[in-house]
Length: 198
Image (cartoon, rainbow, N blue to C red; front, side):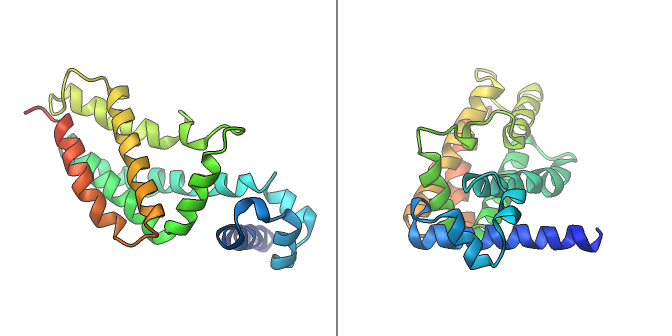
């Protein structure tokens, strides 16, 4: 990466970090783009070069997580593991990443914005890598007769994603007073066991 691109990336990361801190402190609706610019000592042109709006800052966080799924998690899902073990490992690594790299306050703020009915929720975007990865793992499990045959891969994905949203919401309103990585294990052991052939 050349110095110019590196500096642009650093500026983008700085804007994102400061904006998320402001959202957490003051509330998303109480923070203006001008305030973000002032706190980061950047220009309006620089802000809009990286983000179309304040909402785009959250979209960037989701893209970071999706990149993590593709670049870090998928390579670890190969091999002779059972599909249900792959699901457990994927979800554990996902929740560990969210806990260590986002934190409960950022998750809370994201949820607040995703509940805005005037916008299309990124959570519901079917093109996210999250959905494709879960679908492929569930489909593999059904084909190998490791997961139930009376549910479609899409139905299984819906159950898994609803459980993910549930624990993330609970963790954020609990102000992160428990380990997300540890607590999710209890939940998803039960959920995934219910998807397995007994």
